[in-house]
Image 1 (cartoon, one colour):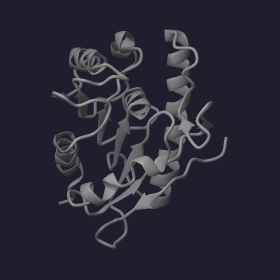
Image 2 (cartoon, helix red, strand yellow):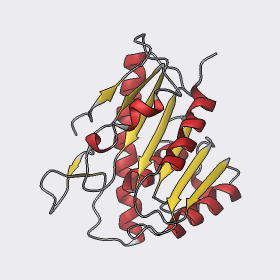
Image 3 (cartoon, helix red, strand yellow):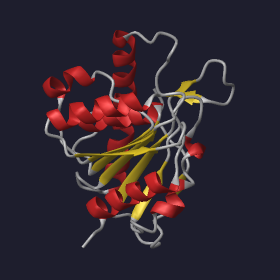
Image 4 (cartoon, one colour):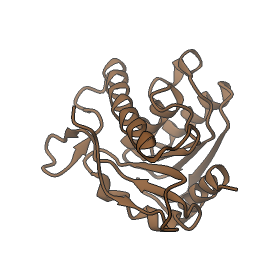
Length: 219
């Protein structure tokens, strides 16, 4: 498989990066869908490089879209296999970028939206990305939540953000993830947004900026 890549932004300081923030898009989109978040979040972490890699697979039925894993078969076994493969691909990308930038463990933050949120939760909690600084999961869920306690590899702080009116991925998916994370001893904060559908809003993005500043603000 070819190495992932996508649009980049920063660091806002103009200096060498002191952290890496990886933005993982949803099903049918690509890295361009999220890279605009970087300009806003760079105010919180001006030393960070933001990268929004394109998913490794073409998306059937969406000519210019990409997918982290297929959704034609939504059985638990297929979803688990798909998200594990996606997390492995993302982990390879993060490892290569961290080595290139000479960043130590703990200086990488993962953010994902929708299918990307499922991918970063898998990668950050089950070891595909080693010891991330945090995981920000928007409008997604944790595939295989019932097995988390047996498969957990790290306990980074996790932020879950979900619209109460999400018509694509129900907010119940993040509520189930929140319960599983808390039961496994993972520090988790959840923000549920009344009236918000399958998307992002200023409140959720501000919460993400707060977490990034807290874990990546270099002394």
